[in-house]
Image 1 (tube, one colour):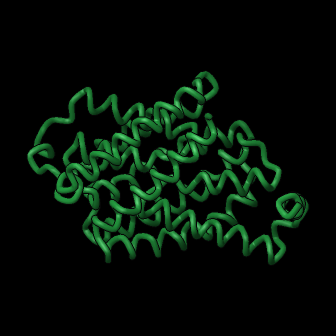
Image 2: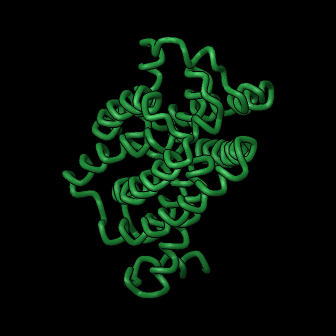
Length: 266
């Protein structure tokens, strides 16, 4: 009954009313903070927008407005602190950006059920690695940074971009893992690259969704205020507390994400 009343209010309230402004900005702040220090919080965005009566396609598209502004903010802040190497970031961001074009266009052909199960298994394996070889994530692999950016690595980030093109949920975590395991970055560097890669590919997906008329601009822009504020606080917190804080945040988010995927598909 309570849930039905909340849903009814969200669907009928004026988005410019003070309560709705507070809800959108507050939830946006939480999502912006969590996405900056770990990832996957965009699932909360979908829940809110769909409770407001948006179809999942509109919720997905509208969320990208806040995503773009949030990750642009965090990228600038990481760069100012000397934690973002543009040369290395571009190697990762370019295939991610190209993949996102196809992901945004061809999401409908993907078997979402099978993909989510595979993703859950993959993330469980990643949690094992984060505890089995914690030094790998904390210190990185300097020798790997000197290696060429091979075709295999390029394809890996292309596929991550494809996934990010049709749903932003979890893409940040995938970028972090691939940057650590394939490129040799530590988790702090990988997190900074994640911000930059998402910032570059999001406009591509945003244009695709805008052309299709799937973006609720009023809601997206209001919501993005909270995203930006959350990104500012999240970036400052990450820089202050360091890589171990990011590692534990990523683990916590993955556990929640896996639980959600399992419950959804059982």
